[in-house]
Image (cartoon, rainbow, N blue to C red; front, top):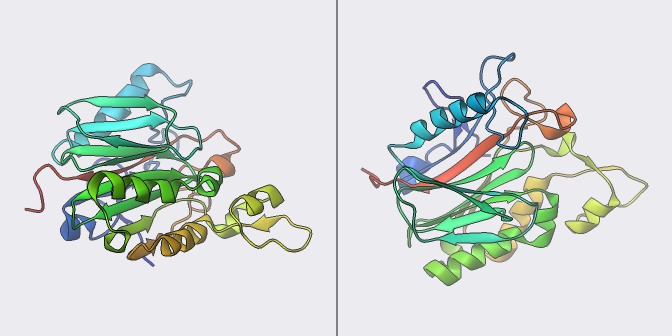
Length: 256
């Protein structure tokens, strides 16, 4: 198992360990912070004061500015659409509509997805210096967003799946994710008996990755629903919780 570790600093950032050194990327996810009364919440579609929302986003953007001064994200729809990005001006922050994944070969552009139980899937091609980041809930997983992300890297960057390194990051764990027959059937998971069933979505994604020929696959052992002190969880909170942001980008300064 590969697990995220806390990065020193003012923001609650959890990182994929070793990727910075191995691949010259920055990758990780924000946590909920250390103040239960005022959690760090990067949800944009919220009833919180605008000043609070933008203040937390400004702090987050500043934390990534040295490695990735440009950001791109989307209003997510639990689908399978993955966008390719060729450009991103330093200091820019682009929000697209109706997509659940992003890919690029441009250094300095951070790909972002928002999560609060769904799985952030990080893909790095260290040979061709290409990256993709996917938002994978059960619907996106069932729709084949991982296959679409891998195929987009192949078409745009010439990626060989055998060169890819994938990490299924922080999200809800199987013991905390109780689902019905429609979900199990959607992701083609065995579901004999009356149900409900417990679904390990990261295990499904890892199995899909192996079927696609992805060369290296790791899986986080953190659970967003169980670890309330660290992470936001839509299911645990009954929809009242905030949002975390996962990010992945090629560092503008390279590996040095």
